[in-house]
Length: 79
Image (cartoon, rainbow, N blue to C red; front, side):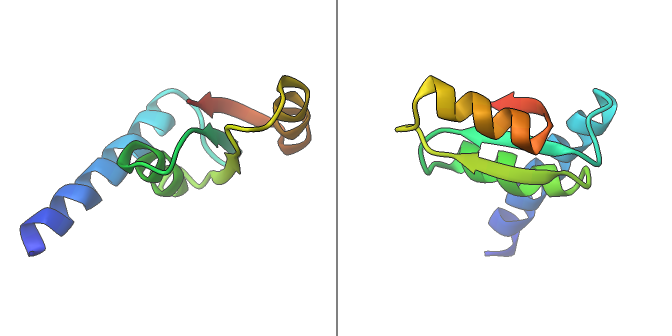
């Protein structure tokens, strides 16, 4: 119900606030991992820090991951 939704919302806010506290805002955040709750928290939570979440496939090579990180000018990679 509502309490579960509120709990998820608070996790998103907490993640976003953590990024801001680290000085990571208004930038790209690369997220690599499997489709799981933590991936979604990082993806949507980064938006609360005015960041652009960039999903990276776990099947990408190291070179492709580096290319995406460089092209997106990310300040953080979440794995």
